[in-house]
Length: 84
Image (cartoon, rainbow, N blue to C red):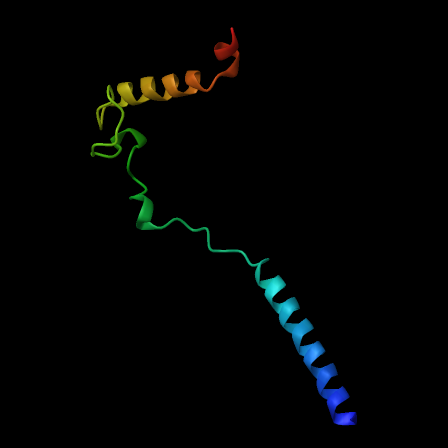
């Protein structure tokens, strides 16, 4: 009987240890360094993607059309303009 109780106590301690360990792994911080996945650091924002998903009226590499598109998107999100 004594060994059964000690095994139950050991299982409880082990379970609590595992729960504590798993909860602490959620507090870890991932590496936030820039990588080459987003493109090279020297690219300009208006260089952009050259595929079928770009907005009509914007041409890749044209800074002025990129700025106009950003301005337009900003105004589309302006709640004051939407309600008046």
